Amino acid sequence: MKAIWVDRLATDTSAVVVRDSEPPKPGPGQVLIRVHRAPINPSDFNYIHGTYRDALERLIWNRSRSADDPVWFDPERTTPCPEPPYILGGE
Image 1 (spheres, helix red, strand yellow):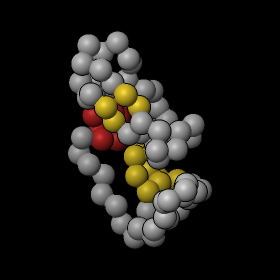
Image 2 (cartoon, rainbow, N blue to C red; image 1 turned 180 degrees about the horizontal axis):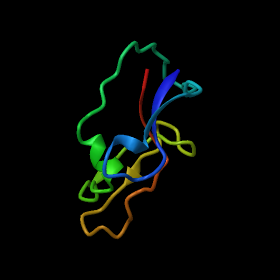
Image 3 (cartoon, rainbow, N blue to C red; image 1 turned 180 degrees about the vertical axis):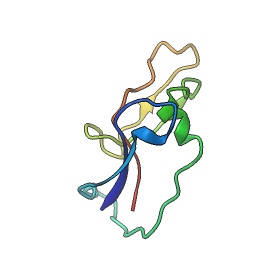
Image 4 (tube, helix red, strand yellow; image 1 turned 135 degrees about the vertical axis):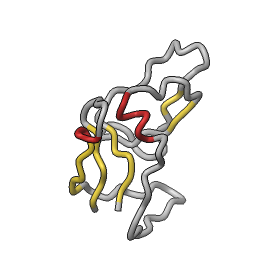
């Protein structure tokens, strides 16, 4: 599948790369569906810029986490914002 990867923080879109990626394996009770096109939410660019630190919780897909592993944030920001690489979406 094609996926959008962000390997580093940047002030522009130079960190955004489209790569081939292995499709995720569905877990128990889950199904894998084919998606022909998927939008990127404009708020995802806050991750690229490193400015999305006010989120209370956010799901990040990257090489070390499955789609079911949430990354939690707290209002006092005692938990840091995750660092790249991210996979923001896939096609």
